[in-house]
Image (cartoon, rainbow, N blue to C red; front, side, top):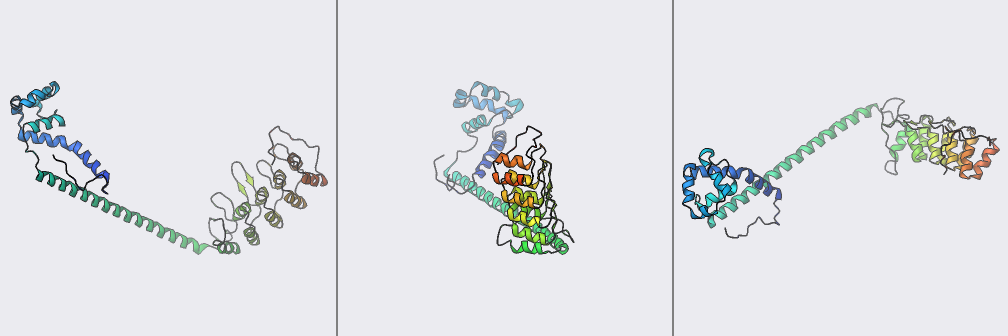
Length: 333
C-alpha cells in the first residue's frame, strides 16, 4: 500500500484515545474476522492441497505452523494465529489486493468513525456537565431552604450585628451553632468553643467587648483530651493585654486551671508577660498556685530571668522556698 498523506496526522486535534480504542478492537475482533474469511474462502478440507501447490508457502512455512495446519480438518481454524491466517490469505489470493480506491474508501470510513466518536464524546461530556450542574443547583436550593428555616429561629444580638457589620472590613471568625432564644452569645461550634473564646484567642478586642456587653459567659472555655483553657487563660497565653483587661472587668475565675493546673498567672509568667502578670495579681490571682509538677509563678519568672515579675511576686509574698515536686523539664520562654 502506497504512502499517502491524510488528515489523521500526529498533530491532529483528534483525541489519541480514539486510536487506542480502535487498536483494542482490532486485537480482539481481527482473529475472528480472519477465521470467518478462511472458512468462507478456504474450506479446511482443501487447505493442505492448496498449500502444497503454492511454492512460496511450501518453502516458507515453519515446522510449528505446519503442525497447526495439520489440525485444520479436526479443529478447523481455531488454533491459527493472526500471522499464520494473514500469510495464508495473502499468498493464496483469497481476497483481491487493495487498490487506490479501496485505500481511499478505507481512510474516509476511518475518518468518519473518528468524527462520530469525537461527536459522541462531546455529547457525553455535555450531558455529564448538565447533570453535574443540576445536582449542584439542587444542593444549592436545599441549602437555601435550610438557611431560611434556621433564619426564622435566629435571635439577633448586638454581638451578631457587630460581627456582621465587620465581615467586609476585616478578618473575622465564622461561628456556627444551634439557633434559639438565649443561645446565640454562648453557642459552641463543632470544636466545643464559644465566640468569646475564639475572639480571645484571635485577638479581636472589639468583638470581645461586644460579646461581653451581650453577657457572654467569661468562664466557658475549651476542653479536649489534652487541654482545658478559659477565655482568660487563652488571652493571657496569647499575650493579648487589652482583652485580658476587658475580661477581668467581668470578674472571671482568675484562678481557673486546666489539666496541667496552669492558671492565667502561670501562663503570664511563662510567657514573660509582665504587664498581664501585674494585672492578674491586682485582681487577686493566686501567687502560690502550682502546676502539676509543682512549679510556681516564681519558678517560671526566675527560670526566664524576668527580674520585674520576680520582684512583683516577692513584693506580694511569693514563697521563695517552694520546690518543684518532679524532675520533668520546664519550658521557659
